[in-house]
Length: 556
Image 1 (cartoon, rainbow, N blue to C red):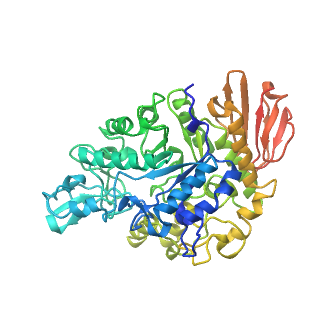
Image 2 (image 1 turned 45 degrees about the vertical axis):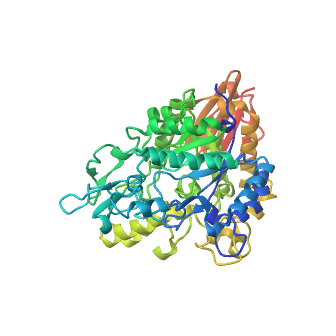
Image 3 (image 1 turned 120 degrees about the horizontal axis):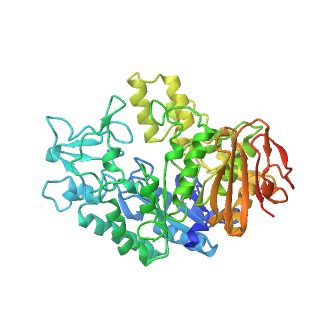
C-alpha cells in the first residue's frame, strides 16, 4: 500500500464568502477564517480546502477569476492571506487552494486582450469560432443554461463558455496557456500552500471540430461527450505534474465531471503521474429526474450502495477515492439522504457521517456539516444568489416547462445556495456570522443549530465528527483497509466491512426512521464498539437497530 499523508488526512472545505465576517460588511473574509482556526483545530481536521479567494468580479461567486495572483478585495489582502497561511501552519493545518483553470473571467487581462482583434497575441488563449449560417458555431448549451457561445461584435466571432458567459474557456491546446498556468501554480507553491483542488479539470481538453451534441431538453445540445475526459487531458495533467506538482509534497484533487472508474484510475493512479485523487459525481446524480438535477426525487439506498461500492472496489490498490456528501455545489446532505426533522436531525447526521468516514478514501467535511446544518426554507426566487439556480428558474419557469411552485420546491431541495448560507456560529444576530447585513439569508434554524451550542455538549454532532476524525487518525484499517459490502439488497441498512491484515471492522448504518432487525455476523459477536450514535457499549447477536442508528464494531 502506497502510504501518503493526504490519504490519512481529513479535509474541511471553507466557502469564504459564508464562513466568518471579520469587518461587518456582510461577506466572509480571510481574517474571519484566521479567527476560527482554533475551532477547526479543536474539530481535528488536517487540511483546509479554500474555495476561490482570487480577484474576481463575482459572476459565479469567485469561480470567475480576473487575477490569479491577487486577492478579492472583499476577502482582504495578500498580507491577510499570508497571515492566515502562517496561522494555519502554526496549528498543523495545511491549506489547499481552489484552482480554476478551465476558464477565466471575461475581465481577466488575457481575455480583454484576446477579444481586441483576431491577430492579438492573446487571441488563441481562448476558443474562438466563426458562426454557421448566421448562428452559433454548434448547438452546445452551457452548464448554467442558455447557449455555450457568445457573439462578439468586435471581431464578428463567437467565444466558448461552458459555464457563465463571463467565464470564457481557456484554450489548453496553446502551449503558452499551459506555461502561464504552470508558472502561476508554481508561484503559489513557493508561497507555501499545500495543494490544489482543481475545478472541472476533466474539461480542459475538447474534441477536435467541436461537433453538435445530442439535444435532450428541447433547447440545446449536450457538450459533455466532447469536453469531459477529452483526448489530451491526461497529457496536459502529466505535463502539469512533471513541471509543477512533482516538485512539491502536495494534496491534489481533480473535480472530474463525467469521470468513470477506469478514467479515475488514470487521473489518480497510485503511480503519482497526474493527481492524488478525483471528485466524481455519480452518487450525486442518482436522484436526478426528467429535468436533470432539478427534481425532488429521493435516492434509493440500493442504488447508492451499488454506486459507492463500485468506486470503493474499483479504485482499491489502483487509485484513491475522495469521500464527500456535501460541498459548495451540493445541497445539505442531511436534508437529502438523512432526516432534518427535530426528532431525527442529530442522530441521522451522525449516521451519515459514520457511513462516509469509515470508507476508503480521504473524507471531506463541508463547513456546517459537522453541526448538522440543513437545507434552507427559501420563499421566493429573490432569496437566491446562485447564478445556476436563478438561470434555471428563468429558463424553465418562463418557458412554461416547469410551473413556479414545482421549480421552487426543486430549488429548495437541490440549489447550491442551500450550502452557501452563512455558517451558524451562535444564536445571536445573524448566527454570529456578521455584524452587518449578510450577502445571503441566514437559515432561520440557527438558534437551534449552531457551533457555540455544540462544541461543549458531549453528545453533539460536532463532537461525534470529532470522534470520527480521531478514529481515522488512530485506526489504520479505516484508512487503508479493503472494503466489502454486505446485504446489498437491503433498502434499509448500509452494512460493510473494512479489513487490513489481521484487523477488521464492521460498519452498520440504518438509513430509515424505522426500527430494523439485524443479526450480527458471528466473527463480530465479541467485538469492541469503536463508535455508536446511540452510545451503545456492547452489541447483541440479535439486535433491533433504532431509527438512523449507526455503529462501528472492531473484531476482537
